Image (tube, rainbow, N blue to C red):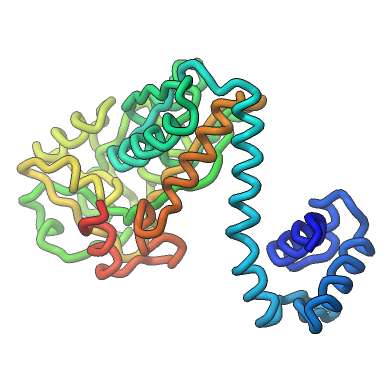
Length: 321
């Protein structure tokens, strides 16, 4: 197969739309159709099912995509790494993170990155969410792994590296602490302790004013750091929302982490400043994505499944943590 045939096939397999495929490849829809027909004649049968309403892969097309994609991505990474090496990947790369699991992923990515680019050093900085976004915008860090959403126009939100089940953090003596799971309606059961200095979008995502059914959620005190938030909860001042995995890293008396049975998981995404990236930053981003996508690595089973069940929450706090 020629390179343009591989790219056309994989792009159409991704888009399942001839016009969008042509737009991505900067060619005409007719060129896309001609290339696919040529490829189908070569393999001896259809790779796509076409109708006036939809385009879908055939079983043979699915198998071809599964066989080709890993090798194609490996070639793309190799070429990009070679280009980065010639561009001069050197110096210091400063990376911020807001959660311990993010730090673990970055340490592993830093090891792999240093093996490839010995002249570039990766420095890690643990910061709270509001301070993390400020550090990125003020160029104290070059890259950040943090929880979306972000509404600042000068911050670009890249790929999600992993996700963890969402939980309600409550005082250990509260009746909710004896439950196996809670619902988003339980947010109205006690005051909500909030993190200070977060954006409006982040506050709406993690500290809503009302439950899905419209019940008012009382506001409790706020704290500027995670340890301050936990201290307030242990003191009986209210509850807060976090990833369930936080209970693995922040174990202390007086608090309990209870998974939600009807909430989306908490996602952790790469973020960087708009306006382009340096060769070393591009190379490190590729390395982080590669490390985070290792099977059995960072992502919990509840991602993308809607409301996670308790069995999935147990899985994402297992030994893989």
